[in-house]
Length: 339
Image 1 (cartoon, rainbow, N blue to C red):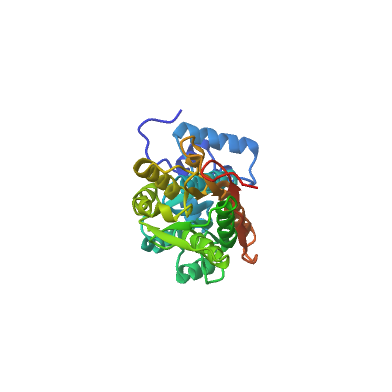
Image 2 (image 1 turned 90 degrees about the vertical axis):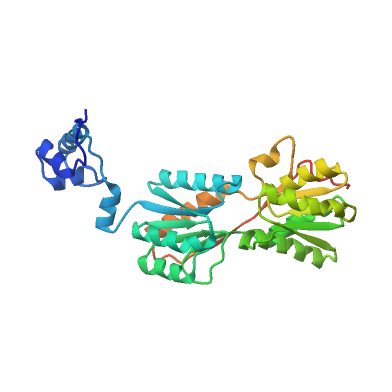
C-alpha cells in the first residue's frame, strides 16, 4: 500500500526501499532488460508500497526516444473525424504507443502544435487537419520523425500520404445520380477550400462536363449540417431546375434534406435525388436513409498507424502514397435503377 503524505516519489526512493541500485530500478521497468525475476519482483513491490510510477515522458526526453506519437486533427465535432481519431488512438495503443492529441482550431495553428510535438520527442505523427508547411516537413525529416498525412497534399518528399481517390469518387457520385435518369444536376461544396472536400466536388463537376451535363454549384458556409441547412434556402427556389444533388459531405446532405422537406415539402427521391459522402452513422438513420459514398474511417486510421509504425521501425523506407477507393451505398434518397 502506498505511503500517505509522500509526494514526488523517485527511483532513488524505490532503490533505497528495495535495497538495490537506481539502475536496477530502471531495468525493472524496462521491457527486455537483463534483470533477475527476484530483483524485478522486489523492485516492483517497493514501488507499489511507495506509490511510485515511472515517468515515461521524462525517460523519453532523456534518452531522445519515446513511445509517444502525435495525432493532429481538426473538426472533432464531426462524426467522421471523431471516429477517425478514436480508431487511430486505439490502434496506436494496441501497437504499444501512447498517443498525444493536438486539436487544430485554425489552419495557422498547425505549425505551433507540430513544433510542440517535436519538443516531446515523439516517435511519429499522424496529421489529418491542415497540411503542415514544407519547412515543418523538412524539420521532421531532419529529426527522423515519420509523418503520415491523411487526405492532404504535400510537395516535399518525406511523409507517407493517404488520400481518397477523388476522381473515382466524382465518377461514383455522377453514376449514382444518373443511373435512374437524373439529368439536371448540382453540387454543394463549402466556401472554404480543402484538398479532399473541394477535390471531390471538382471531380464530380469534371465528370458532368465530360458528359455534357450542366451542373449548378452551390457554396455552403461550412461542411456542417448548418451549412447544408442554410444553403438549402437558396436551393429551394431553384428546385424546378434540379433533379439530382451531390453533397460533398453527409452533414451537408442531412441539413439540405431537412430544410427542403420542412420548407418546400420536397419529395426525396421522387422529386430530387441526393447523394452524400462519408457514410457517417447518421446517414443510415431511419429519418434520412441517405444514399452516399463510404469513406472508410477505420481503414484509413488503421493504415495510417501501420505506415507510421513501419517508418519508425524502417526509417530509410521510401515514403508511400496510398489512395482509398470509395464505396457506393444506395439507400432511399436515390431512386431505384429504371433498368
